[in-house]
Length: 146
Image 1 (cartoon, one colour):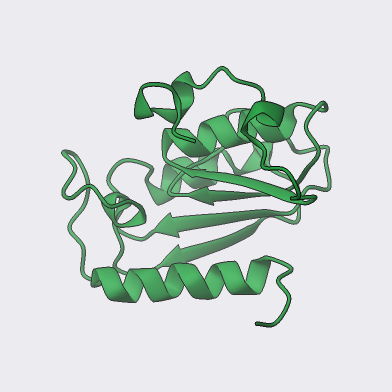
Image 2 (image 1 turned 60 degrees about the vertical axis):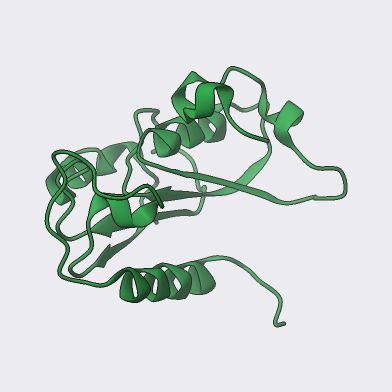
């Protein structure tokens, strides 16, 4: 289901409306402002969220008093959600937050929309960034072996 206007921050539907029947465990996540929206879902006690993944993003909601597992994926050369912006917002996350900084990556490499104005210059290939994201997710998510 696509977010309202294809822009997650404008999404107003409750998480329950977005859930799929038969799925019992939900991790929410998002890239850039989609991550900010995912934090809002995670902060709402009505939502039974098992964890949160931020892709070149940070929380604007205070989750610091929770034990929610959080993975923050940062891009070393991100010109939009800069590593310092992500670090400045880290106090809103639980103390067990895992941060993985992907060397040479930029903001746009978390998505598939090309170069973004104001972003940094990548020194890592899209394939290298994709492998790093996959490895971090495999380490973080409680997945069953294939």
